[in-house]
Image (cartoon, helix red, strand yellow):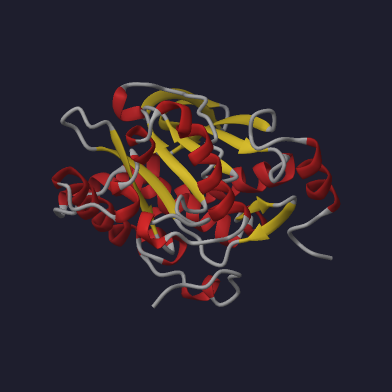
Length: 279
């Protein structure tokens, strides 16, 4: 049986419209005490690493090795599996310019320190105007007269997502927004946030990181103070249901418990991975 076009997904694609009524939400508190200790140790060595970088690697490997059926999107009523696993990470660019975004390619196959270095380097490029073509065109619709904005958006979406046409001049394709999105609102002091699924992005999930705090929890019948990271997920129910969310949650918890593994190339796991990596 086609691992992507299961009977439920085919039915759901016909029932639901592009994510306006197919959104489902979930929250999860993650014990990141070990991960925070790892961050502190590696920062002490002069390496600039954040919880967002760790979460990007954690989630990429969770999807690649535990829930590969999530790495897909809907095109003309059918589920299309992606060949690569890329993660979009929004970054604040300051100066009143708001937020830009960086797509970390092959995030599941890269050490977390390499992910951190790319995000930092490309964030600097975005702030200085040396950003990618896709980022440069993020405000394309603003330059189009209001009555035409919606039709132009629908045409671009139809060409790139529904028809699979790559518009290189604009840096647009069905993979422009990656496989899923990891967004950090904790840096703004927020604990949780229920975010939207942008129709043009065609991602099955947006994972939001809240503010990391120390909280009392019960461990082996005793109250302990642990470092907790709240996660909130918005999912496209045409693709994701409770089974996939449960598998994802278990993999996220496991991966955060072994942060040092995230700075290694997972060669053994890559041997059985469904997704190819770029040279």
